Length: 370
Ligand code: NDP
Ligand code: GDR
Image (cartoon, rainbow, N blue to C red):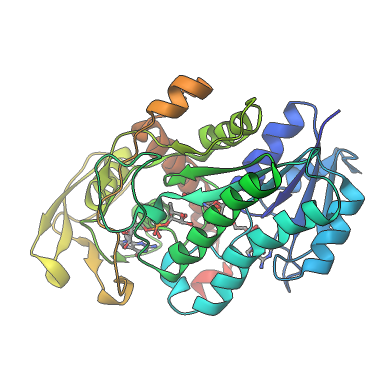
């Protein structure tokens, strides 16, 4: 029975990966941070088997800034595979907390690699490092592949660049199975609420249910290669099952603007939009509402641009070349963008219908009564 250790277990990818590995028969250990509120919503269904704790899923308190704690956990767990997914993962926030981001996302990777080396586990433990398409930053080549030069454009991306190269260095210096998955954006109903796709699908659901008037967003021209997180965690696992440790780009090869993602999300609930104006004056108005369940006024502004969401330096265009991962890993995603949007919209409409029903019944829902 293989044993895996996942940092970032409470995050989007940690939750999907844990489920994927448990289904493959692994014993899964997670590292989670202490927080003042429960933060295990995404993994609670895995922690319990009926009313009993699942003995194959064990969580440990820990932090990527604390090397003694990481050494202790790795010594106890003796993992066959480590997936280092823990990170301060928000690009815009990294401009506000650059030093912390460097510590967690950059040095945190070093702490994991060094712990494995110090514990004499270099021949036993394979390490997956969560690298990112943000490394490509300012466009050097289209589409971006494993050999495309990096040009990071945020403290997050610069920290992840250290994580990338220290992983390569430990592989070469100590003959470790330490590899990078350079993953392009991947989303899901479990996506953090402040990333643009989830902010949009939540906003659309709230608007059609009468819980919110409009969504305020930043750069609508940015283009991203969006896939489904469920597909991407399988790629992480496949990368560690290869005979040779190598780095891989994981992407769909299709890029879409934020604006088009907005149109797709509204279309999913029968609302057609028209965009008007430019730059900070751009808005999206309702031109048709085809679902009798929802009552939106024609001409109602449902999206506006707020410069507060602009970034000091932006990444304009990401589009990955999945040739290597398709040919060498045999990786094939089950979702396309349309099915991703459908999945996310379905989940968010269901989520906010609960709020709407409660409020119609005269009950208080905290987030609407600040
Ligand atoms: P999330 O933001 O959803 O999850 C991040 C996880 O890291 C959370 O569990 C968080 O804990 C944990 N974490 C944050 N800081 C620390 C710390 N100091 N010590 C230990 N754990 C910490 O990210 P995703 O699941 O989306 O992404 C997973 C990884 O993949 C990240 O490294 C991200 O940078 C990278 N990545 C993501 C992509 C994407 O499109 N999703 C694309 C490419 C790379 P808590 O819940 O307590 O906040
Ligand atoms: P990204 O994802 O920065 O690519 O990083 P995010 O969804 O935050 O932004 C994507 C693009 O949308 C534009 N945008 C907005 N973004 C946010 N968050 N909020 C807004 O209101 C908004 N309006 C427009 C952004 O400017 C950007 O161009 C994600 C993270 O998961 C990283 O951890 C990961 O490494 C990369 O994907 C690949």
